Length: 373
Ligand SMILES: Cc1cc2nc3c(=O)[nH]c(=O)nc-3n(C[C@H](O)[C@H](O)[C@H](O)COP(=O)(O)OP(=O)(O)OC[C@H]3O[C@@H](n4cnc5c(N)ncnc54)[C@H](O)[C@@H]3O)c2cc1C
Figure 1 (cartoon, rainbow, N blue to C red):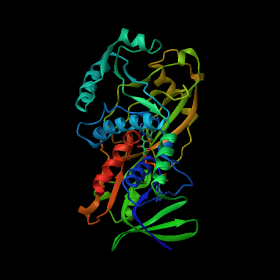
Figure 2 (figure 1 turned 120 degrees about the horizontal axis):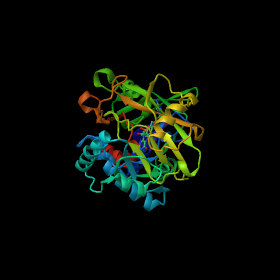
Figure 3 (figure 1 turned 30 degrees about the horizontal axis):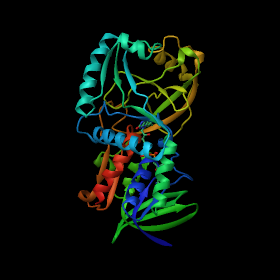
Figure 4 (figure 1 turned 90 degrees about the vertical axis):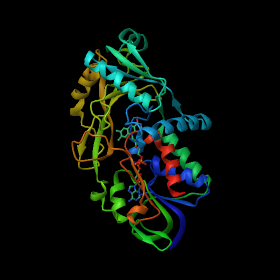
């Protein structure tokens, strides 16, 4: 059987859903194709659920621009649609004087990215905000917050559907070929193969977006689209006064590659988590190794001196779609490209959409629409 859609969106994570809601809202005829049985089964439901402010990213990069704009759009959407979220604010805490020097540099970077609300704090000011947190100085980012990623995705899917988008679940995209009027998308549903025809194809396949780009004929190695899997584990803290914090607590980041270091997050239920760590893996295995508890304990104790090993228990893990070779700590921007220059008009690839992809999703969707327009 053959269908015709204007846009085929591969993947129903937060990016595919935001793109579908944006395009369907603009009157486009959209079909979302997802290999799992439901939305948001991979990275979009395995993350810190933080609305990032945009402090860290290289000025002018897509990450910086789309994070800051996405944050604005996301807070507006949460308010307009009553989606669960909280503007918690975040403290980047310097554990010693050497780290304190880096806070100035971070603040300057954030200001270049358009943040005009960052505040450098002394040890005494930090102690007033978070009496249990140890540190010599801090950078306060009031616009950072948390949200429920699931409610956000449900809302996006609902809006896309209301505007006429179709969804295919348990449907694996196994072929993507240029065809006369756009793209032929080969989809395997159970044992059956079917072809869909679409004028445009949007590849928002997350951890497999390099593989989907390869299906479309992109030489991913030459294009620099090759992804590696980088795992982040979380440990949950037992609730007691010594482990209770009100704000998100982050260390001074260790590398340019986007790893912010093991931080302390609070979720909408008030639970406190440590994580995520960062190490390369070969497989998509989401188990958490309880043997890593001591590492997390040590990282957590830098800020919460009264944290006990028995306070922490294995929670969950997520996997980042990372650009660059193993062990690479350099900065890689989001790749969001319409591929006419490669002789593949009508194809938009989104590759390496790691953090702050959740925050940036709405702005990424607007950007993708502009590429298709
Ligand atoms: C540990 C961790 C913490 C993070 N914390 C934050 C944070 O606090 N704030 C923030 O803003 N961002 C955060 N992020 C980043 C954010 O989670 C991601 O950028 C975002 O979820 C990416 O969404 P996506 O839709 O691109 O990918 P995914 O959610 O992985 O969705 C891709 C979808 O494509 C589908 N798919 C793949 N191949 C095919 C195919 N061939 N056919 C059909 N379907 C296919 C998959 O099944 C999947 O559902 C974090 C990420 C990690 C890993």
